[in-house]
Length: 210
Length: 210
DNA sequence: TGCCGGTGTAAGTAAGCGCTTACATCAGTT
DNA sequence: AACTGATGTAAGCGCTTACTTACACCGGCA
Image (cartoon, rainbow over all chains, first blue to last red):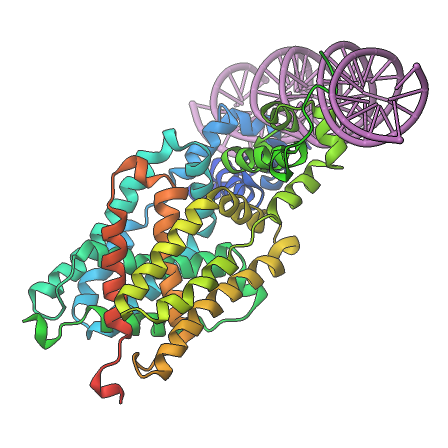
């Protein structure tokens, strides 16, 4: 009835190690780093607390490993080539939808990462903002390419990328992180369409730009 | 050397009660609710911990009072009439600057409020999102008025208000809450201008709208 | 002077926390 | 059967935390 009872892992996603990481992510997200005790994490992961410390030398190291687990840029970048072949407004809407969906998938991670950047900026500043830079560059490259094709107006692609990201991220943050969708229903598809229509009109090429 | 030593308050902003609140706000913002101990708050406020508990029945009640201390909507609303009399893009830039400056002033409060809405949504959901609704309504009323004057295109003012807010808030969040301005310098005035130029082009009236 | 309101020091309580140690069990492999 | 790796139970340590209690001091006012 004790020890060794857990079946051998069926693969990397079912291992004790992974299970602890997933559980920790959820609890760090819901209760904050300090609000989630190692005791509780272990219990919810279905392991003994001593097992948790066999896998991770400290709670802080557990957090670090939780934070280094996602890599969403490839998926976001991979979407750009397809978007370049769509009508402009449709491309924007598709990119915004894709970004929003991606953010929803890693919602817990976003929450924990933001909390930690604010709690311990010295440790995460470079990593986090390096990631943000890559994200902005990704979207800026999309705008730059369409500008070279003569499809868009005359604006700095980086600012456009930041504005695009800002609209979508803030919408995600309010609806999903700050629980607005529990307060008042909202048509996400319609919202994205409306936002992107305004954004498209603000960035599309018009005669005076040529 | 003990007790009674503190001079009588010079006004509401210098009282022990207020000093504790201000200190708590700063520490809750920097270290989080749980990371800021009542011991530390009392020490930084220059009072004995027992004094803190004489003023506030519990740490939780201290937090609640901290969170109920700001009222920025009047200031934001008061800016709208003046904006209505400016050229459109200039009005947007002014409004964005004003919103950004206001957010910077209450940066600690924003940080603590967001953390708490995520930690205990059931307690703050209605208050917080009621505030967000008012904010969106305020900006939507600006767009609605200009639409009636025939200055703006055909779009739902609420979505425009949300997009406007999203751009500015996300910029503030990344630069100020997530410490990006310590990672990489950024011309705030230029950024706001560029964002608002895109936004203005996306919302201004054009012949096809008439 | 005495009273009152406000505040301080010192000590303490009960609970919680991250982490450790000792001993034990189980499954798989040789 | 023996060994190994992974994990469990139980108990514990030292420290921290929110909060409390007892006693004391001070300034202002009547």
